[in-house]
Image 1 (cartoon, rainbow, N blue to C red):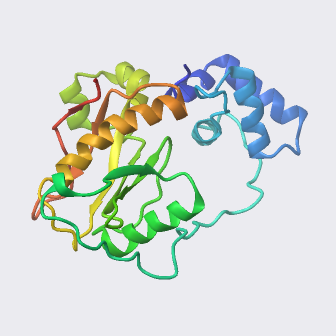
Image 2 (image 1 turned 90 degrees about the vertical axis):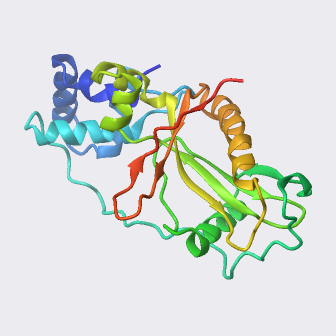
Length: 251
């Protein structure tokens, strides 16, 4: 499996630089996207599902251009940041939620896989999460926390931080180990239990469900199993810090 972080080092070799230069010289009207497509195909930069790793390849090409190794074509257009897709009103409050998680009816995690669910998830985060909505990067999975009482919240996993000294020291990674295995970490980027929901042990129960669910979904969607989940926590008067607690992803 080609890891995204290895793309730059591969292209930085003489073979990669020569290929890009010759392609740019031969096809002077080629777009950046078309260039990245050709490079991915030539060097085998595909993810486990066989899709070209365009974002990683594009980033590597820009960084190598910044070192003066070649000149990329001018961008065809400037892409703005899209607004999150959301509802026209707040998500309806859950009703009759019991005070203990064991009494919650029909509690389940539903993976966000369509437009309607995405709008609900975004609306919950925009209105009710302290940090609002977020644009996930890389491999990602979102869930709605559903029940017969209504939506109780949402949770979302995305790509991990590329470099994090506390984490890498805790794991015992050197630079090579981090580049080789970084994709095996997923980041718990958003976790919301709605403030109107007062239910003992709900958060810990949902976290437990989510760790098993995200492992299975990564296998089904991305064809590999993550090893651990990282997250960050707020500290009063301090910046966010990496949470050193590890949740094992094994059965």
